[in-house]
Image 1 (cartoon, protein in one colour):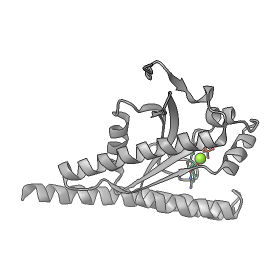
Image 2 (cartoon, helix red, strand yellow; image 1 turned 180 degrees about the horizontal axis):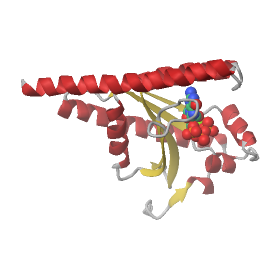
Image 3 (cartoon, protein in one colour; image 1 turned 30 degrees about the vertical axis):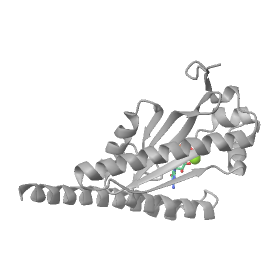
Length: 217
Ligand code: GTP
Ligand code: MG
């Protein structure tokens, strides 16, 4: 009997029963996205002679963190609730050099036919109160199993090296103070975030000037 895979494409919430299945599916989705990003980066290197991507980090959220998040949002810890309500079980972070690369990468990802963009949050155009800047996408992509196709959600965070530097330090500080850092520290962090944005803008401008000079030669 031939399987009609297209007809059997399912929503992940319908037929995932165990943590092992969740882990398998989200790991598979991360592998696919990672490969797609590597290919885009290599192609970009071929065509434009530079790498827009500095590095990529991928992780599946620890089960304890998933349970904590469900609890925080008032949901029971079931597999169904995990896949329905936790959008960042699979997470990938793409770190690039310049702000312009962020939008280029986001567009290349969105243009892939098998990737469906579910939501976009542009914290570069609209930074968070903390000062946090990054470009977030929740996407869904099909994972092919032996007897069915399952659409799996992945959170993609795209940011510059400078934004990443700020975000990782800020995260560490908030963790240390359990999210309640003293006011002056928060103010200092927000100010640093603005310096980072300014640095990114100046580095971008510098790079564009250099590219223009190269173009003349
Ligand atoms: P979470 O429940 O934290 O996942 O938030 P959300 O579902 O409302 O999504 P949001 O886009 O606000 O944040 C998603 C992720 O972005 C977080 O899990 C962090 O990794 C990162 N993030 C968001 N805000 C901040 C911030 O102020 N500082 C740092 N360091 N990271 C942040
Ligand atoms: Mg998160």
